[in-house]
Length: 219
Image 1 (cartoon, rainbow, N blue to C red):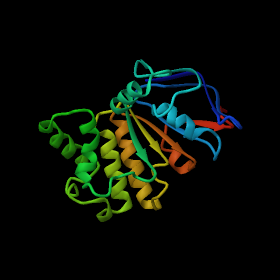
Image 2 (image 1 turned 180 degrees about the horizontal axis):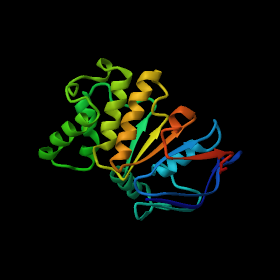
Image 3 (image 1 turned 120 degrees about the horizontal axis):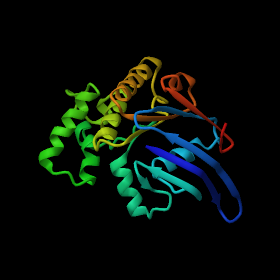
């Protein structure tokens, strides 16, 4: 599903050069459940951005679901990102003026799915995360755990090849954290490829494999 070979990322402001990633080799098979761990400055956010097609590596190759995305132009990269990657963020990133159902529908609008299909997909995704009766509520009417469930439903809407979760429980209490991780566990048990970026060992223990980063390298 994912193959990175000798991937490096350098940020050059003209005054300061930062080597965020150096010679990263990583493969993730279809259906795997992988945690990426590292302290602040380890490069895990940069790696997440590359895995999620939010950024290109400076050098090296990245093949995602059969697409060589290493040097794609922004428009082409955005199309692959929309169809192949589902994102779950620490801050939920729900649009406050939209209902839960409308938030889940957003990726379907960008993929030009006809209206006749969108409603059914939204209902299915909300049911999958246990919120079938909360679709008409706006984010300020939802708890933190419910908001993250909506974010997961939105991430799944286009049936992506991978689900990429960035500190998905960082804003949640311990009980709600377990509820969210149980959903990710269940999605993986159903065959979904799940990658969790975290600094929390409790979260990482849910994964089947952990990749540790230090100073931009896999250790």
